[in-house]
Figure (spheres, rainbow, N blue to C red):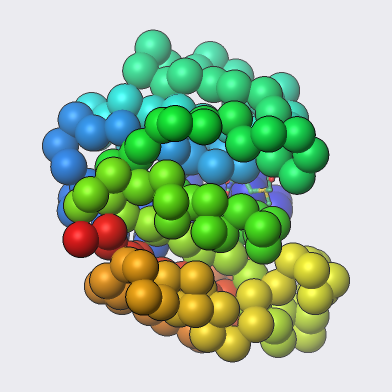
Length: 171
Ligand SMILES: C[S@@+](CC[C@H](N)C(=O)[O-])C[C@H]1O[C@@H](n2cnc3c(N)ncnc32)[C@H](O)[C@@H]1O
C-alpha cells in the first residue's frame, strides 16, 4: 500500500499535534485520503483540508471543511486566512513554501514532512521537483520561524524512504 493511502497518521504529525493551540484552526494541505485531517479533527481542531482530488476523502467529519483546489494553478485558496498549524506530508510544490509561512498565525506551527533527495534509490518519487534539497525546509523557515525540530534521514516505516521533516513556529 502506498504511504498516502495508509490511514495511519504520520508519527511526525502525531508528535507535534499536542503543540498546536487547543481548538485552533489547522490546514491539511494536499490532504489525500484525509488521514491527518481526520486525526486532527478527532483532537478537536477546526480543520481545513484541500486537495486537487478530494474523491479519496470520503465522509469528512463535521469539523473538517474540505475544499477541492489545484494548488499549483490558480490563486491560493486561503487568501486572508491564518492558521494555528499547517500540516503538509508527502507533497511538495516549492512556490507554496513562503505562502505557507505567511499563512501562520502568531504561535502557529508549520509541520512539514516529505521526500528528500536520495529517495530515488528507494523508488518514487524520484523526480527532483518533488524531492527536498538538503536543508530546504530549514531555508524556508530561516529568518521567519523558530525551528523546534528538524530531521533529515532515511526511515524504514511505512516503507524505506529518504525524508526531511520540520516543526517550526511563528513567534
Ligand atoms: C502522496 S499524496 C499525500 C496525501 C496526504 N498528504 C498524506 O500524506 O496522506 C499527494 C497528494 O497531493 C495531491 N496533489 C498533487 N498535486 C496537487 C495540486 N496541484 N493541487 C492540489 N493537490 C495536489 C494529490 O491529489 C495527493 O492527494
